[in-house]
Image 1 (cartoon, one colour):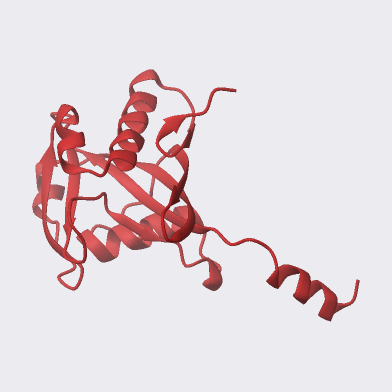
Image 2 (image 1 turned 90 degrees about the vertical axis):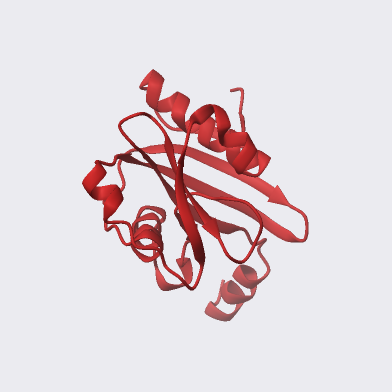
Length: 164
């Protein structure tokens, strides 16, 4: 296959989006959520992986966390990988990493990226579905379960565990 043929082949392959986020908790087990100004509802610190620039999922989670809440934290273990189709866009592969437990001092150091975020808050795990879109609430719940059980990354499709 020539270089030109290979480039044509690659250009014709399906496209997917990729995103990465970090799951932070406080000492009481509440989850840190951020409120975007560009859509309704809440989210985790995170966003699109800049894969065209060579960014990896882990690096994307770290960069997005630093940009959005001003904390430069090396992501911990990968908790969840979720294949999330959506209307009007290609599917998203979402990576969710453990950000650990933030001390009161670290929480006080949060500085929001005002171009994208309105506020942040800590939410009880039982209240996640009232704040997050359904697929994301399921993703976060699966991540909390993985932390509690000490098991490896959970494979999800649209927030629901894949049965192997």
